[in-house]
Length: 206
Length: 206
Image 1 (cartoon, each protein chain N blue to C red):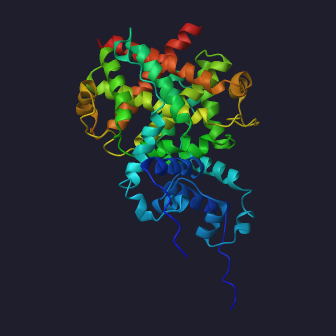
Image 2 (tube, rainbow over the protein chains, first blue to last red):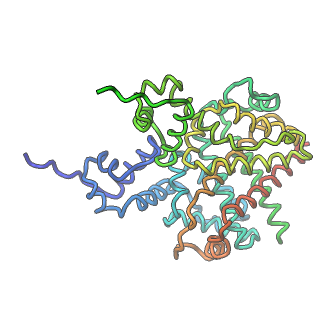
Image 3 (cartoon, chains in turn orange, green):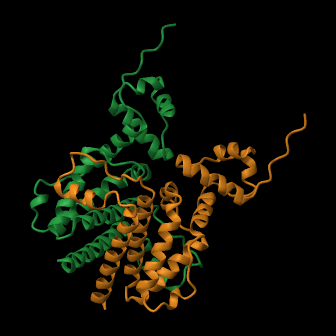
């Protein structure tokens, strides 16, 4: 019997399959990926150097939908750039919530990620932050956005209706817990608050 | 040959094993868990109702180390309560970063989680936020803390040393990118900024 032809492979096909595995099972392995693609594990290495490169390609894939406005660097105000990048970033990552801990566990390498971090660094520097503060501000925004992306992927009922909620928590849940835009409203609130805090910090540093 | 005796099982043993699987592979399945524990899958169901209950027990386990100071509700200022809970919460979750997307994908049920959310709801209510704002403030803090827990588990080198970094990003990385307390410093900065923003929001709402 002739051996069945090897399926046509490419880095893109490999990354698509790995991302589907992460979306459903939280991770991927090289042997599992080869099995899913019905190829020999060694065939994968003709296209990617290994697991770390696949993770970096998934990061690039997830961030590819982020629109970096040409005018961002010249935006009227650094705060507009930060807010608009945060919105884009959250939406792109909320499509692959289970990818998030794999990405944060690996060193950022991909160009598309640096385009976003460069734009944020330029904006925070324009806002008057010192270099060390710029990195802290980027990290704080990153953390808030990644957590918010996870929240956007949360179930309709984030908190159970339980007698263990005290009166303030029950009132909070009754007011906003099941609103259709709960996650969006909470993100808008959080981004507004975070930016107000950054603005105050920038003013006091000048 | 006599069948080997069934290993002594308990919900605690099941949760320990599931948490180890999540820590290493990002997820667990009931058959995989049974195999790891060397028991029949049906034996698991004598102790837990299924996957959802195990996830909730993992949440309780992760949050068990959070110290809820008896005096939190009567703290001098709501801001102290919020800051101290955020610190405890981040440390507990940073030990199990890969558990985070499983937890955010499931409705919060466990008493120990509600103890923390109740304390936060009490604090934000004392701060003058409306019930809907209380839930948004809790969610924003939650998002920031969970993202920061992922960052605490990040590799030493979060961003590669690459020519793709622009001048502001290179300066930021040179100033703080490899500091031993990078993640802690960024969290302290972010928490300070977030709380300053919440304080401003609370004042303007009164």
